[in-house]
Image: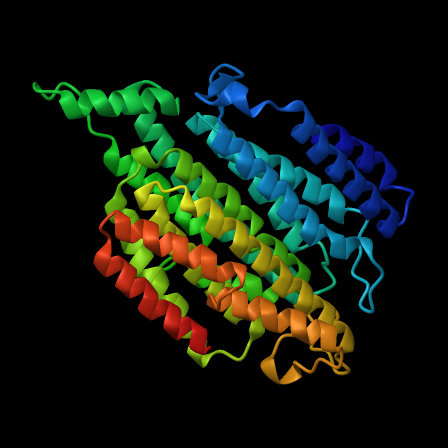
Length: 405
């Protein structure tokens, strides 16, 4: 259905205005979500099953994540269907986003390293194009070029690790990798090669694409230079699908690598924003901090990650939508692509808008009785149950520092 919508909008984008195209795309996306909801039987995939020659695997967890990705994407795309003061609409905006959504929805289902690379490139190339879509902006072109170069490095590492894994095991299927790891673990005569180092390369490339510390400097530049609407989109949805892929295949990855990224991301995400006045950079570091939280639930394979991911996605979308709406009241914008960027510009004559932004910030801090509190509470309880005492205390300390800024 998404592919049919993509081809339809490809035709209509040549002779229709951007608002009409965006509204048609939103209708197609809503219909695809309803079709998925009504035609899918969750009881049929309790053990899980594979499709298309073992390339994709479908489970209850995967389908739950697909619904969440589609819902968050629809919330973000609502802004593109309305007329605003700074009209940045393009007839190719929704077209590129539909291509990106196809990659987003396929990535959590991937069960093969070669398919992982192709789906990752489908997702990444559309994001490169979306970042530089408004090419009249020097900063947007700069962000797109930087994103392309850094994404290319990460994709090369993914392909290189897949090459070595295939050379040692003779397979690229992730289900076969699980069986191979069991053989290596139970092997007495050392007849099998250990591929853990190459899976460490793979997970570092995925975390590089997510922009987690210490591989994060490029992402701050991209988020800062890109138009605010593109920053809101790329800083959330791409990380969702990658996080879900890692959660589904966590048994293949080394927890020590995740632990290293967990500690560094928490330190950088809580310390660096104390010296920032740029709102986009502050929200980007906040995203790094929150996805650092999720790395802990990823290591414990706890389903509380779904709850935290859901509430954080809603809060993130609301914050950026409030930031975009507040930009309509700025008399001296930084640019038409990012009218509101600095804290001193934040003047909200609209009381309802100010209240929504305050509630979103309180939820991000984890203040009760807002959703952010329950997400953090259940996540901390699950990590304490798994005996991650020091990590939980460190997380609370960094969360307090994050609350300050």
